[in-house]
Length: 387
Image (cartoon, rainbow, N blue to C red; front, side, top):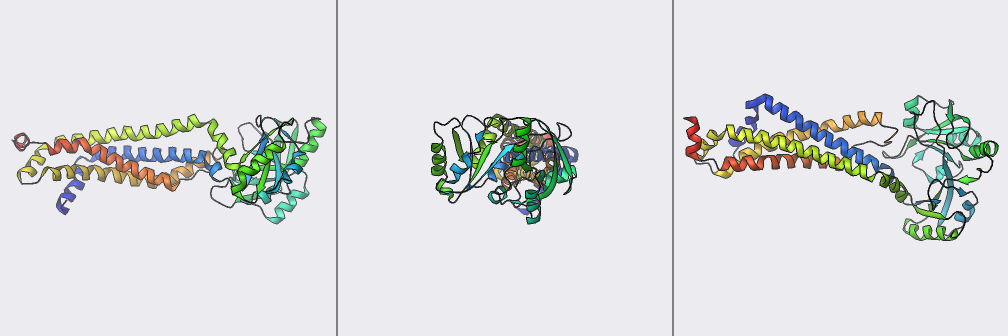
């Protein structure tokens, strides 16, 4: 296409400014919404993506609702290929009111942070946590959300474990990577165990899950099988899997919802594609006489079709670029309000490529029928409209 025809194609949308602006606005919103919904889906998998391939999770084979004996720790540690074993329990307390939800884990303090090096905690804070039975560690984002500072007393009302608890914040950890969860709260497992001896005799010395470090990620399947074989036919059989598989099992529980979000995102693109096609069809009908004049001057039908495609792609790609540029700030705004649900809410590079591809697809598909109609406009029929 010659530079002159390209300028004509790019200037054509300005002949109906209001219609062009409304079409652009609709496409920008569609591309932005598509990006945000794709970010929600990627945030759902953030925990699994951040999982280490050198960590296994051992839990009760029946379900997570059933605990394992503390005595299993030594037997797991003795299995060939295991480097380090720690354990934890989901605490599930209430901070001031039920709406203040955040993950709370009672952890074994000596080995946990060695197994999870992506949680960066200063040596001074770690030692202070180990010295204080009522000590706690919180993630950076969680501490910012509630305005906590080191030394603050944080009250939690037990739900799974009875009683009222007060913890002293001894450290704030930061994530080593962008997808590290900084919204967790850690208390000491031994302190919780002591309280259970007093408040709920018989529930002490029970572990929710074991966190198992291994030397070679390629041996994960073999080591998992050996751990489970060690407790076969016991009162509490185990199920051992990689940390990523463990995280994906939670995602699988909401798989239908994730698929629904993906379907909605493509429905949005389909709707705006129809709107864009209607806009281009109206433009093609209005310019029938102009296309006929171009044909009379000797321009071939494919040049006429190229004009329609150039106009459609110009609108679609402009809206796509604007939508892509608006997605990161919109994601930061949404993510700041969904921290408790999505610890990591960032726009992935794949999402940006999908948005660009969607905008390109809209431009191509929306122009297909109008371009075909413009190419078939007869010279006599078109010029008769001028007369």
